Image 1 (cartoon, rainbow, N blue to C red):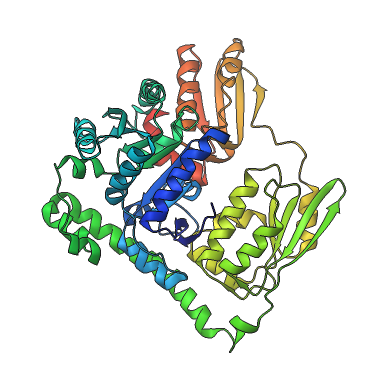
Image 2 (image 1 turned 120 degrees about the vertical axis):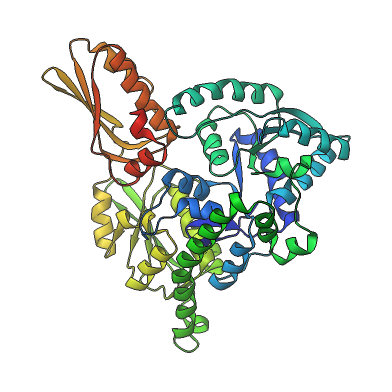
Length: 499
């Protein structure tokens, strides 16, 4: 199914109504039988965005959560502020699709189609109570199981929690559930899914926050008129001001302040474009294939207006399975809306998942500001070049084989371990601990993180295992050189106490 989304502060939000969201989710359930890839659905509200954002335009306060939200298979707007913001950034989101509204619809459709669900999370007993209520309302529903474990995503108990996930995941997999509803709250539910993605055998997982409490009846929802007016948060605030006042006020203030640069830039770009520009600028997409030695590339000159329409034409030029490097030329681009930015994000993720690179040339300062204000420039800055010739010279340096993930260097009585690239759940070198332990004549180990671009919570757990294993052998282990997203991840996971 075709995906249409808009960018709001670096996160793609799908332009879906409730009916289309339900249809998309069950389409993904069907696709699992063809590719066996577990998929994640996020119901994104202002709290999600506030948790990912820092006041610095080029940094994220939680790089792992930001990456998860960017790569989610479906992301719906669970808050009316996101719908309002979309109206000022380009094509508007049709309506909000909240977890509390989505779950009953998913359950009804699952009962009709003979699909099963598993409820995970919530307060002790909440999952079972919610399961009973859902079964009463939908007698044909297949409840695969429920569980309300307490999991950790930070602090000294993170490795223990990661190990305990084995039992939770095994029970879920044995249930053969089609849909997993995860109610740990943000960001815990998304991070828990990501660190277990490789182990889960469930077609679709959906983060649903506090929905089990609503279904079980332990927490009441706002009247329907407040839900439709987008003031449900006021009702929740009135019911629990001590817990929610600080969170809502900080979230709304932070999101409001950080949204205005992108909104003002978008509105200014439209208002100051030359008269008739949006109708008369060069609208065709120009492409040409070329080669640089043994390496092939596709050079695409983007049109003057980079929006949903031009994105479709560009998409038609890019093979479903990349066969060449991609050079995107922005020299003609004069206007970009949030759908164009969303397409750009998806194209970057698509190419990054392949063996081929993507390069950017011809960007003017306006385009850079647009990417910075919309929190996407971090994906572009390290592969941006002034002209096509500069990108081609960079292409010459591209190796045909991926760089080594780690390097061991002997230094007197010690070992220096240099990690490179990304250390995350899908790329952890599990054989490394065994290799380090075999060097019995080496009495200490230094782990150099200066070349590491990204680490997730699974990577942090792996580092803690290295340190623990070596120190149990009487070999001191130290870390150095962490910077950027790596340093921020060590902070948000509480790894200073752990490591």
